[in-house]
Length: 174
Image (cartoon, rainbow, N blue to C red; front, top):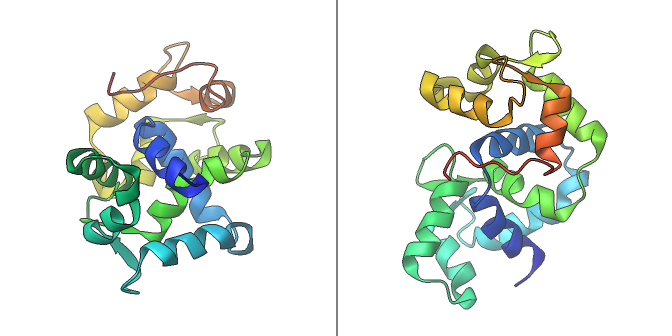
């Protein structure tokens, strides 16, 4: 299994907050920094449609000997917008972390981007701004609860870094 494939499988098991952050980082990363990931996306997108269909995804990963249900689950968890296809940015987010050690500056930039009102904290409103139409109160409350170590209802930069660096292992689905 190559690094891109490992990344896709690993990303599928990441918690929702981590996926949001990786998507923010993917949006803010320059094309040159991730050229190899864009090339990998193109190899999955065999029909050159600009997205990866379920069929293309399964075909590319069939050699991993995962059953159809496992591949469906991985696909669904990468398809965060639930469009039935994997968009370029979703693919980049899913493969970004394993392809490079995320720099402190990238994490700081992602935190500041999510903290759109510059309070020094990520609030429920900040996450809803990032999530757009997919923002639901219970969903966002659970995301914050997972990262918010001091239970004040928001995420400080220290909590953000501690969570993202894996010192606290949390996943909403467990």
